Length: 174
Image 1 (cartoon, rainbow, N blue to C red):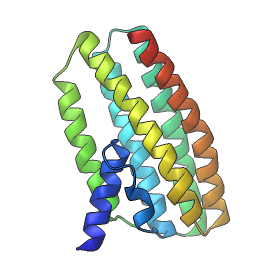
Image 2 (cartoon, one colour; image 1 turned 120 degrees about the vertical axis):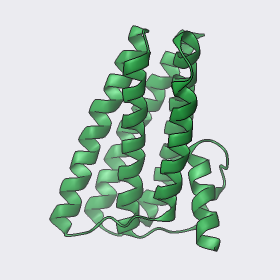
Image 3 (cartoon, one colour; image 1 turned 30 degrees about the vertical axis):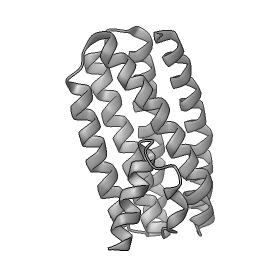
């Protein structure tokens, strides 16, 4: 039961609701691989929604960058786990992330125009801020495999850029 609570808090943290939750549990490398892949997939799905709904060229360009970059990192992650013969382990954090992302996409899908653009970009700022924090404070320090740790560090550099880009786009929407 405690693991489920920790996973729920962790997922809520990714969506900006529980900033102190990340330090509560130390995931294994197979769990880290699954969490990281899931987080990337979530952002790809949100970006695809933005591409289909937004008419704002800056929002669409940002979303296209998210699809390209997250698909590239996920491809690298899959190649690494195959090389290491590691099976990513589904876990409560990944499941909770997926459920929360589905709820967020449902909310976004009901919006249109400037309301959608603002909600999508604001969510991207918060999401990247939380994912970057999780990478720095939990996932990278918990990774025991050097190659996995290196991939996560590379991802962190890319995702910091995403956060800055999202903040810039958010500033332009005001």
